[in-house]
Image 1 (cartoon, rainbow, N blue to C red):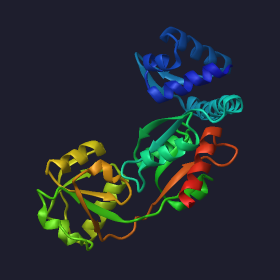
Image 2: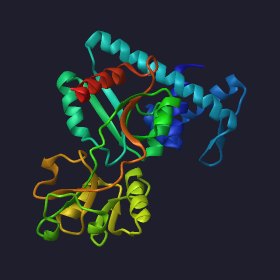
Image 3: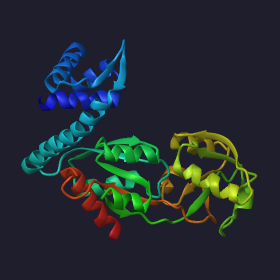
Length: 298
């Protein structure tokens, strides 16, 4: 058994396809298949359900895979530690983020980059449940999203909580002049408006649906999507209004659009920047987290 076989196994889990896993591993598909069969022979276990295509892992394969994730994560952390000792804090940090969290990710990354200019970022946009799974499986180094406090304690994550600054309505003044004003809006003020909202799989959307339903209102959603870019464009052309957490969008991104607070109860989950517990987080993740903590406190 060697580390490459375990990396191949983890890549196969991520890609769910032998050809794509081979590409991700920078080997040919026959080479990847042969190395994984050698691993199965060495362990004396069948790890992969094979038909004409990849068909998931056997129960034994799932157990071996959980160890493989841990070993590969430690191995990658070791490589990053060696690189940081030689060259300072440099490399690519994998960040999982949920849409419409209560912080502007680009602003945060720019602030960290001022301290660590050699740090690069690969961003994956995930649902809240997918983010938790990615943190547990070490497929992301940092998670930024909404979490239950009990879950953070149970999994021993390091977490820096984000301020909940409430919710706001964003609209184009040419198309919705009736929304002009400074005082907070009530749910009844926006229930008849056409809305551009995140997909129902997103936690923030479920939060909105739940509270409007509890108040006896049904939202009029004219466009829903997982893309924040498409939501903003929908608002810019007057298709509808957007409801968003305060702090998620920087003023430069909305241009001439207007914003106004919306009175809503706090979310049951808490926004947070999260990494693995001390000693298990990668060196890059720990440097990033420590700098984020410093920035948020100050």
